[in-house]
Image 1 (spheres, rainbow, N blue to C red):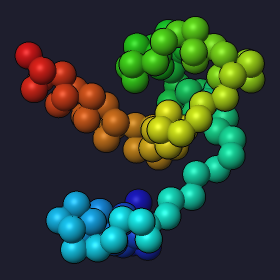
Image 2: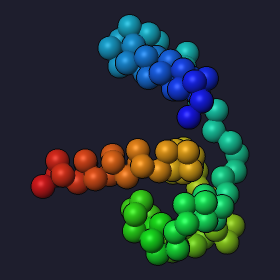
Image 3: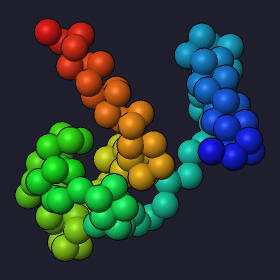
Image 4: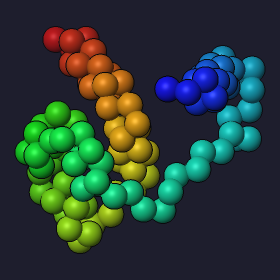
Length: 104
């Protein structure tokens, strides 16, 4: 990861903490989410089959197929999560794994 990218991530984390603590106004914070996400490209980049991708990230196989075949489009949080998966798939997997551990 480049220094510039890591600096941006660190700044975003600092902003999120300030908002969570009530030290900054969350209404002023904007996130740009692209209108379209190529789910098939993300999956192929991770070198996973549809069933592996769906199982690893907790996506219903039918939903994944619909996104890849462009019959459906991921909206809102799923679209953001897919963007994170593309850039930081290990972080998503850690979050899922850690959440499952706390639930047991």
